[in-house]
Image (cartoon, rainbow, N blue to C red; front, side):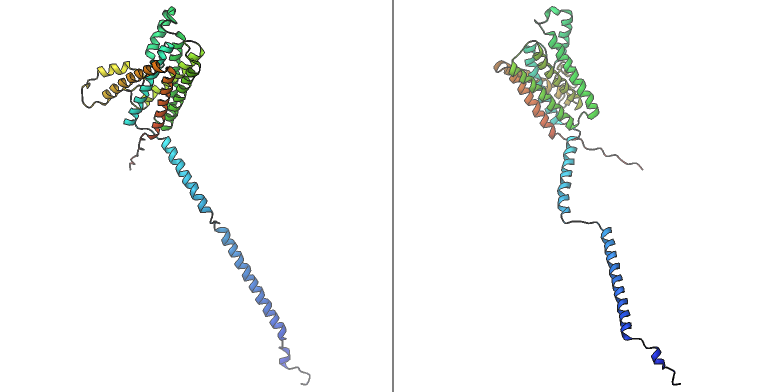
Length: 311
C-alpha cells in the first residue's frame, strides 16, 4: 500500500504545456481564416471588371464623334429627291451650258455641248473636206463629239454602280466638271485662243467631257424635260404636248423654263464674249457649276422605305 502512487499524480499535466498548445492552435486557425479571406477577395477582384474614373470622360467624346461621323456619312450617301430645288439646279446648269456654247463656236468652230450640230458638221467634213478651216475644223468637231460621248458613257455607267441620285456622287461629279471648266478657262486666259492645235483640243475636250457628264444628271434626277444642253427634243415635245395650254402641266412648264434658260445663257455668254473675252465667260460658267455642286448638299433626301411584315 505504501508503494502505490495516488491517482492525482497520474492525471497531472503541466499548465504551461496546455496553454502553449491552445495558443498555437488558435494562431493556426487565425492564419487559416486570413488566408481564406484573402483568397476570396482575390477571386472577387478577378471576376469584377476594373473601371477607372477616367474611362467615362474619354469614352463619351469618342461616342459623340462616331455618331456625328455616321450622321454626315448617311447624309452624303442619301438618295436625292427630284424636287423643285433639283429643277432649279438643272436650270442653272442649263444657263452655264448656254454660255459655253456661245463662246466655243466662234472660237473653235464647234459646239461644246450641242452634239447635233457637231454630228452634221462631222458628216460634212467626210464628204466636203475642202470646207475644213472655213466653215468648221474637223479635228475640233471630232474632239468635241468624242469627249462628250466619253463623259456621258463614263458617268452613266458609274452611276449604275454607285447610285444615280446619290448625293455624294452628284456633288463629286459637279466638282469634277467645275474643275475641268476652270482648267479650260485657265488655258484660254494664259495662252489665248488657238483655232487649231493641241491647246484647242485640250480646251474643247475639257468642256465637252464636262458637258457629257452633266447631261446624264438630268436623266438621273428623272427630269428628262431639262436636258441642260439639247434643245431640239424640248422644242418638239413642247409643240406636240396635248396639254400645252393647260394651267397645271409640269412637264410643259419644265420645257419652257429650260428653253428660256438656254437662250438666257447664250445671250449672257455672247455679251461676256463681246465685252471681256471668252475666257471670262468660261470661268464664270465654271463658278456657276461649282455653286450647283454646293447646292446639292441641301437637297431633300428620299425617305427610307418601310417594308410591311406579313404574317
